[in-house]
Image 1 (cartoon, helix red, strand yellow):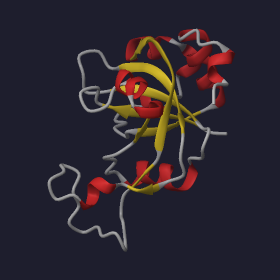
Image 2 (cartoon, one colour):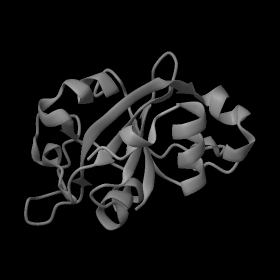
Image 3 (tube, rainbow, N blue to C red):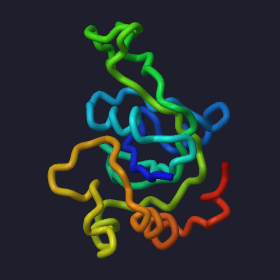
Image 4 (cartoon, rainbow, N blue to C red):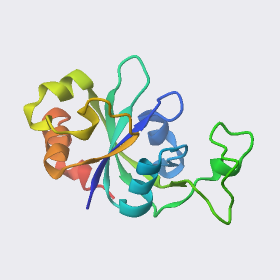
Length: 162
């Protein structure tokens, strides 16, 4: 099992939107960075843990926990000329952009960037690296445990929800 931090702008898809969605599952559309796409396409697996991070908002931070709920498949927004994520160079025969579905596990108290930076055990966390702008980053086992258990207080029962 792997763990990930996935950023979403809450006005586009928030942890509350995920909790209200049909089957509490949403496609993670709109990723247009090759490294982030490759994480989804090549490394994510059903059941992987996700730290759901609200970005580009008044107070960015981790707002909840989710799980990867599908294998990767082509992001349909790349084919939709009316979408801001349309890619003229992509085609159904040769899609450039992939996505995975994510499913809701639980909301957490908002864990802000200053809170993450204040925790010495998270010093090497990729999202805290200077200049990091990736929307999807790997999270180590220790980072996952520190955030979910120590900072968020999420129960083991909630984390084992399928």
